Length: 426
Image (cartoon, rainbow, N blue to C red; front, side):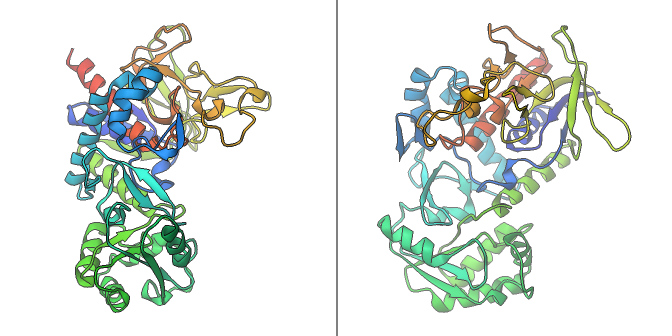
């Protein structure tokens, strides 16, 4: 029997599995589908915007967590863990990405947020980014050449350059022929990235960029520089262009997120962790015992029971499918029916203003936990002694509003993995 069953294959579940497996636990991961990595920018947003100043990006998020957040929101997941453990989780993630050959880095000023351009030319605060995005940091001085391709959907270089110029950045745009990317008449960024795994295609692209880039500029591209050989692709193109090259994430499916998922999944498999996609957890056996015996998943023939000594729930919140709801406004957690702080009336889900600095209760509601990520009821009593809850399921957090989704996933997954390692040693 496995020491640990992780339910969910998003970043929080994969980070939990890695931390626990690194400590010697026998781990298995099951999931209904792929996690939010396939939808995001592939970056690690630690804390982007403070509730008190929703229009002003947080400059130093770890200092913010240690200071204002811990005092004003002591039940926030970061506050429960403490800033030191959050920092340790990020260090562990950086070391992991370096080990799997997909290195992540941060600002040139340690502990500062990066400000990276979006696909519409806005500035987006984030703490860690793949190496291929770092040269896009808006704190750098080099002017930008935004490179697009005629006929490529969802990336419009002149729009990006125009909006960056409004932010005070030196930026211009150029359109290159679509056939530099592919011989297909139509393709998305995932297919284009796969094509750039071919060294000949990379050389063709680099030669075209080199013809239009000016001395001192850095080149911004959509995320097309390889899928399975992305670091080599980015290195080759940058070397052949002879100038800094960076990617700007576009709409899903997320090429940078897919790269990270593939790298983490392969690393876990090398560590002996089974990662099984296509298994939807629908129930469990525990009752009033306070100890989970098994988790049940749907299959094409009959329900399948999964047994382990410990369990981690990482199925995502209201947007990830970890919670469900009905027409009456009732919201419930779908595997263990854990107590939620989410309002149970539809009229209480949203505040009157669509853009509200406090966020909407339906998104901030979730599962209460202690510092070990174990679920608690409304009275603060432990619900199950062998269950941890991580990621977007947690209460007192609004990761989309505050730009902290991936940071919370990494930190809570790391905290749960460490505590499970501690329990296994005792």
